[in-house]
Amino acid sequence: LAAVQRQLHDAVDVERTFLQTVIDSAGDPVMVIDLNFRVLLINQAAAQLVRGSGEVEGLRGQLCHQLFCGSKSPCRDARFSCPVRAVRKRQRPVKLLHNPFHGNNVNNTFELEVSPLRDSQGELYGIIEVARDVTDRLRIEKELRDSQSHLYRLAHHDILTGLPNRLLF
Image (cartoon, rainbow, N blue to C red; front, side, top):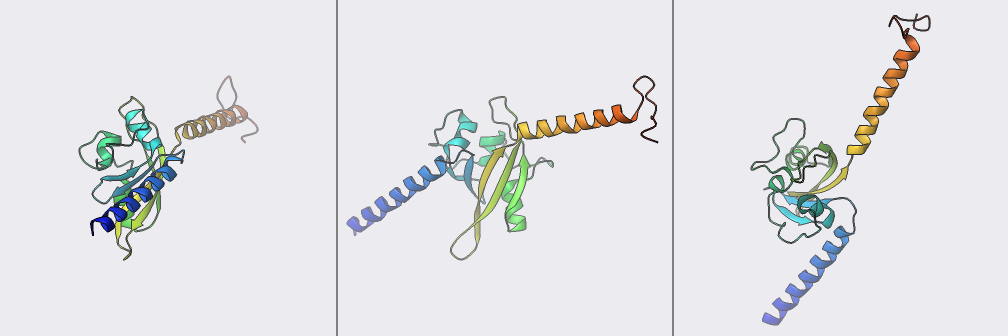
């Protein structure tokens, strides 16, 4: 019995190591979080956001909102939905924008692709979260909108008086 238990334990360790290697190869932050907000699995890219190093040891079992937002309670900001609550409510994959503080004076905006994690009976027991930093994309889109607005104003109003020109009429 002890030999069988040792074999099962070794097999689980091999599978866990394999899974960790697979998610560590992803360039985007990836986490698996249970319904109690505990991190079950985290890759090196996500660990880099938290610690500044890719060390994942010690991050498993911690609360996601403490790691990424420095908060004692789950996300309460009306602008940024809690990924766990969003999937629990909708029972399907969702895309969210989130702006966590990482403790390193960086407030980046992330697009989260969050999928439900179900057990063999189909019951929801967690989420799989893949994050993508979209801070630069959002900044560029805003600059583009501002430039378009400025060009429209230049094309349709007199520069000196600010009055509408013939093109606008």
